[in-house]
Image (cartoon, rainbow, N blue to C red; front, side, top):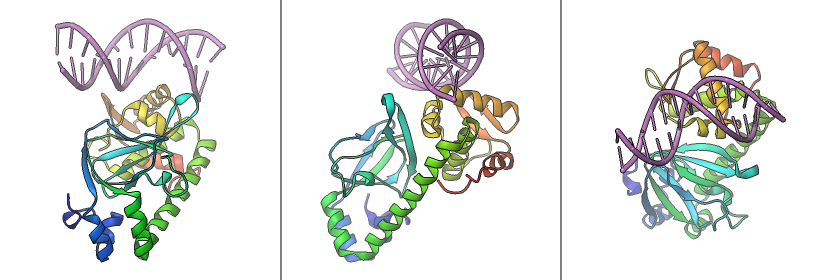
Length: 232
DNA sequence: GCATTAATTGGTC
DNA sequence: GACCAATTAATGC
């Protein structure tokens, strides 16, 4: 998977390919195919570099109290994973697992550091990326403290819709109830109950494990009342 | 099909 | 609202 032919124009590597240093380093990356449901970053393991997603979907998670999983975010093509353990600490602060079959481009810490030193525009893009992530995690803290379970579940579904889209009937991203719970910050049973309730209220539809949005405006309204809409 | 995993429901603290 | 147990539906082989 050569960067020159990569369609992900928003990828930080691709964006900076015009700089010869980036283009040169891009030749030394390692690309790997990772099957669905495979963990490719273990929390607490030694940081070796960053993964840029060429294609596929992955989840980023952190182990909380009682070994409960907390999903931090989901990422798709063009995005980067592993940066949390970058720089300051030597171990990855997060784990990451594929949700779909994916192709990842790996850049070693050493290569990246050389690029940070040599290419300001690349470093600048990363800085903006970190800043945006920080802002998202700040509003997330607020959400967790103030939202009801119903709002958290609606918020999670709206996020899935914003980020991965929706076809005629259902959300494009099909997650297990357990993953939705781990992302929303509640339990699997609560997610199931909320989805069932919202389906009865004609705001959602469901068929098997698939979930779809029926009344987007009403769902948005419930969240916007608490000023939580935008971001994340 | 059978076996394993996920979704759902009901009840308790 | 979380945790636990029992039932049922979905999925892998």
